[in-house]
Image 1 (cartoon, rainbow, N blue to C red):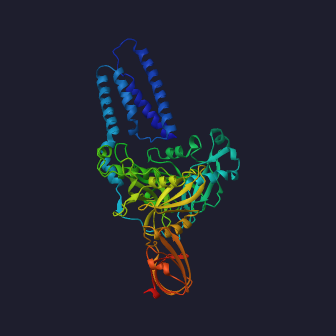
Image 2 (image 1 turned 180 degrees about the horizontal axis):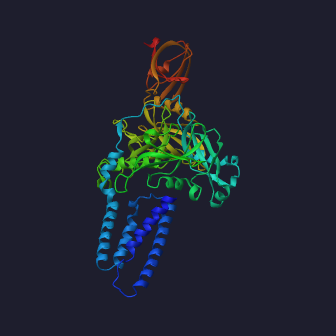
Image 3 (image 1 turned 120 degrees about the vertical axis):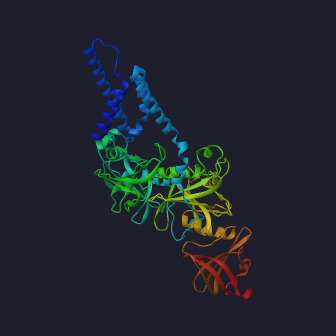
Length: 560
């Protein structure tokens, strides 16, 4: 607290010196005049110090002197008007300096656009690696997870004191889970309760899982007041740091909760932001420690806030040719999507358990749902990669995928949430959760980004993947396998055959005498419709580990 008192006192004294005329022409009553002036001076110092203290204390604004430029303009202008003679000239000059500084700060976004773009510049690749279909994507939508946690709120002691806090995803002990803190529901509840009792966890991959309430006393929280408020607590320790984004809850491997907040630096002139590190706070004791990005503790997944990532995406997409081009010509401009689940970005995990923020980019032209690419930003390092997609194909953006779902279930009034682009079997594909009007999960929808007529839905992501593989085989898509699928060849005798008509083609499933099952479409091998039990065949397939392996080629010995 001592720092803020000293800061506001210095500002109060300096402001009073600028505001109150120092010299007057009145030579009479010098003694009385000095006493009166001193009284006015002390009153002005007190009032201005109180006003400045209140602003910085309740707003948690950074306490750098550069943040005072609006106050400087007002005070120097008023001081120049009240002063006379040389004093007016001096204060008038100060006013011009403050005004120039203010203009510099207000127009910096025009002149530092190129620098912002360079800061946000991403590596470029064509496609992400194909998804391993043995894995389960983190596909439980946050709205559904939040609904389930609310229904389980009876597990919380003294329930009427609390409400559910912000939801976010994290990898915890090898599992992908949503976590949400229990927060105070108002000032008087905080006054009586002093600390919150814990947080909820819920699987982010299993929609049938139930929330678990974990007891963990938290004193410093976003819903606490005065110096127990987590943002104010951090600001008191780090008065000059530039923070961007909300505080986020992170749980270590022992289940202990910590609040984190991303800090960084302005690009220039108090404008723009570049993440440099984060502050970690023990929610019970309030102990704090700051880390640079490269030294982030292992248990923290979201070291760079989603707000900071969203800002960087905006720089990269809009400012490629400077500020004016982003407003008028818009050459090569690509707009980041606003369909993300956290500040316009969606957290996803790769096969190694590393979290990334996903964002797709679309054209600035209205009525166009063509995707211009997509980015993945490492949530621990802030390093981003932009994927252009196959240049020979045109991809549909996330908004287009959501519109297909809305039309598909128009009578039921279901809607999609959390569209994520995956590389399924070599095909760029949108996986989207489908919710009803009450926010409850109904199914999972997969649609090809390049061939929107190829789409399936099922009760689980893995069931939808199996259907999608079949749909790709009979449609215009191609099945090229997964990130770990090895292409193999096998020969044997057909034991069982099952044929299913699907549009203009036939899907043939067959079992060999080595107990391996295969599936192939007559679109790929027209002669597959003649396959029968007892035929000797040679199959070239992808070893995906599934019950029915996708065949790429089929040779029937009797039909050679």
